[in-house]
Amino acid sequence: MTQAFDIIIVGAGMVGAALATGLGQQGIQVALIDKATPASFDPSASPDIRVSALSAGSERYLQSLGAWQDILAMRATPYRRLAVWDDTPHPLSRLLPGTMTEVEFSATELGASHLGHIVENSITQNALWQSVQREADVTLLTGEGIQALEQNADAATVTLEDGSQLTGQLVIGADGALSKVRTLAGIGVARDQYEQQAMVISVRYQGQPEDITWQGFFPSGPRAFLPLHSAGDQHPGETWGSLVWYDSPARLAELKVLDNQDLITEIRRAFPARLPELTHIDAKASFPIARQHAKQYVLNRVVLAGDAAHTINPLAGQGVNLGFQDAQCLQGLIKEARRSGDDLANPRWLAQYEHQRRPANRRMMLAMDLFYHLFSNAIPPVHLARNLGLGAARALPFARNRVARYAMGLDEQLPRPVQQILNRLPGINRI
Image 1 (cartoon, rainbow, N blue to C red):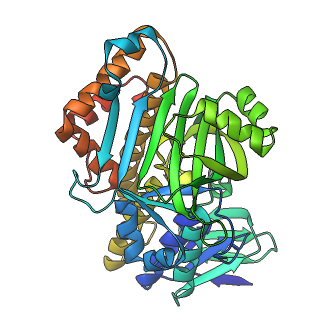
Image 2 (cartoon, helix red, strand yellow):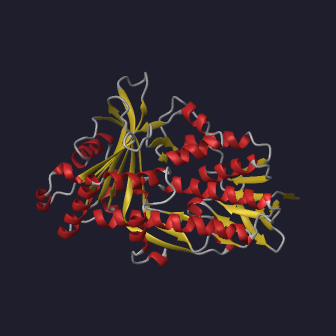
Image 3 (cartoon, one colour):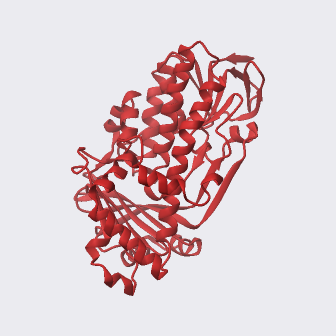
């Protein structure tokens, strides 16, 4: 039996579910496919170890989908300040006062109530599944992955693992970094593995929820703190938080086998002194980090979005925000194609998607690479240069805030001087 739809979306994670909701709101018949079903939200459970810093731009998009209120009804932590500084000990550090090498971004300076929200990935996905299920034009198919993909001049056909088939004008791969859609469509990727890995640690700390998230940079990689919500009556006076520790695979392997009390001791030694007093470790996990970019986002009747199209260094937590920007852009162009009476896979519209999103994603990739290579070493000239750069950012609040507004999704373009610098970087055309 073959079922017919306008669009088939493979992958019902955050980006796929958001896109399905937006298209369903436009009256487009969508099949949304995923092997897994997310667990129901349990307010008494410990927080998901996977969290994202959702920007103000992502928040607006989720509001338009009707998902944001569901997120707030579960839990989300606003942050109003973001601090970054160089914590590398070196004789050159004495040439600049410590306060000159720390930059703090403030919502107040940007004319906003907050910079973003720290939200557990499972909560964002749960809220978007609720939105999907409210859309009569979206059919959610779970429990089966895809095993085959065929395209011709009129349609694309997806074969599920149980042998059933779906046809549509367009197939959207939103199925993550290891995208099966991308593989079946024959789209290649450029991939660069970083030397570092990242370890995420879910903790409780003594004190109330903080309104700041920060990153201190060390030669082995940054160490970051993300505040979460109160731990409630079960743990009076305590708050949940998330730590991210970037380091070599060997060092993180050593840390992962420690018992929780010994790990807390190591965290106290390694993290900046401003880290709140930790009381408990709930979970920990490490993962390799890589930059990956599909060689094309569009091929005939297949289009990629989110991690299926690009993954970046998670240094600033921009991955899911870029994915939501992909979804919003693609959703708008498909709406225009439908309004024009065109085939939804018309190259006229899909080429615009690639033209708009590829350079924007590439700029963010390059920006994260700049941070990675600039801060992950202790070479004296580089150390001095980055400290001078942080000092300049502190001294030039207008330029600093323009960059922050772009990262938050409040402005659509980076300041022109920053764009020009990124466009001149070696390797721009390889990404």
